[in-house]
Amino acid sequence: MSTFNLNGDAKSGDETVDDLDDIDFSKLLEKPRPLTIDRLRSLDERSLLTELSTSPPQLRNADNAASRGNDRADNVVSPSLGFNTPRSLAGFESHPMVGEAWDALRRSMVYFRGQPVGTIAAVDNSEEKLNYDQVFVRDFVPSALAFLMNGEPDIVKNFLLKTLRLQSWEKKIDRFQLGEGVMPASFKVFHDPVRNYETLIADFGESAIGRVAPVDSGFWWIILLRAYTKSTGDSSLADMPECQKGIRLILSLCLSEGFDTFPTLLCADGCCMIDRRMGVYGYPIEIQALFFMSLRCALLLLKHEGEGKEMVEQIAKRLHALSYHMRSYFWLDLKQLNDIYRYKTEEYSHTAVNKFNVIPDSLPEWVFDFMPPNGGFFIGNVSPARMDFRWFALGNCIAILSSLATPDQSTAIMDLIEARWEELVGEMPLKVCYPAIESHEWKIVTGCDPKNTRWSYHNGGSWPVLLWLLTAACIKTGRPQIARRAIEVAEARLHKDNWPEYYDGTVGRYVGKQARKCQTWSIAGYLVAKMMLEDPSHVGMVALEEDKQMKPVMRRSNSWTC
Ligand code: GLC
Image 1 (cartoon, protein in one colour):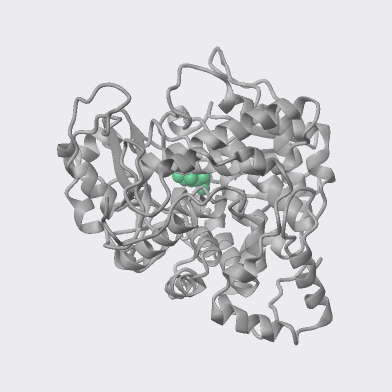
Image 2 (cartoon, rainbow, N blue to C red; image 1 turned 180 degrees about the vertical axis):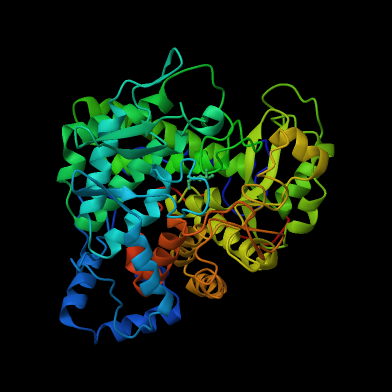
């Protein structure tokens, strides 16, 4: 496998890291070719396809449409069959949980003036509600994908338009005005009984516990707009001047010039799915991967004219720098780990190998055993003298789906998941991060957070929602059998336990100590995973093909030759 030292030299394979520098993202501005999910299908998926060819003509047409593709600047159109009830393609056995999950998902739907606009975070009346009675932007994504896959795009369109309206609100925390492009973390419908009138209430961080900034919301909004466009083939929503402006405002927040020396996005702690203090401040992988994916989606959605033109150029430049930085400095495999272990420190000038002056003594013990001979992953965070070696599920799966990871890196990420199955999947997929932070370090890093104790919640907890991301990544890398195994593990408990938000323990054996039940994204995540396995062309909604016009950047090799 090829790896890079911090000097940017490729140590194996026949390309050098300089090739990375040559990736021409302006090429991404050209119309990409269709993402042929077929190519990615493993043998067993292909045999299922043969079965499909004997399915009813209505379904076959949808599949044909999927391979034709009709997005403006995009590839596969996932089938939208216009069914209102859950469907199952011929030749597939539907698990009894699927029907239960659909009922539960429908019970979570939120209506505003008679129209469905989202899904509530958890339908659990046994616990204090806090903000779980709200529609979270990030939580709605798997719900939205389930509805799109089931041919019900209206709720998704309404959600995208309503949240866009919320973006245009004046947002203040105490006396501080937030940026125009900020999207809310969540919103709810307020019913005024006196006027018998409904209004929306949004939270941009001003009510959130810890006043955390929802940096990921805007990225998810763009990613969802592209999924909607791809699934329905309807580009009129994305083409609306209001949507075009919404995309530009979100990305202006990230692309403005400043003092940064890195192309990654600098963030405060708790600004994404991990919305509490967990040592993810700085350049967390989750945000970097979502940033990369939304930049690529924006290139497909933005009109390359007028105000969009300048932004498109900015995006292309940033993608170029961001992919180089991530693939070079966030990537870790056995070779790279060994290089870091032997680093010299205090190097000055552009010839430095250890560019960020990482002190080898800061390497955690666990990482040496965790790293398999084949395999690798994007680490949690990189900044001066700091490498957070923790493995994070969401960032690594999004890296695969967005093609931030090269094909070799994607394969390596999947190899690692297989090699570390017990640790990462265990008895409930999937660990939000690995490993947990314990003892004194937990006190310092989390500020003694009693929810985030070791192997609980965000600190090494297991989150069923991540199943959809794992499944999508498995299908994109041609390894659906891994997803099948993980889904089977989840099916043994998820419904019986009433769809918990998260599980605790080293292998996820215990329902999380403060986990909500009937957590919507656990339900939707399961449904999306099932539907993608049934019809892998759905993955096209959330996957971006690597641009073939980009030069190949790395070759996988097990040799350690210099
Ligand atoms: C918790 C999670 C966050 C999620 C929210 C609603 O705060 O950390 O990611 O959006 O619950 O489910």
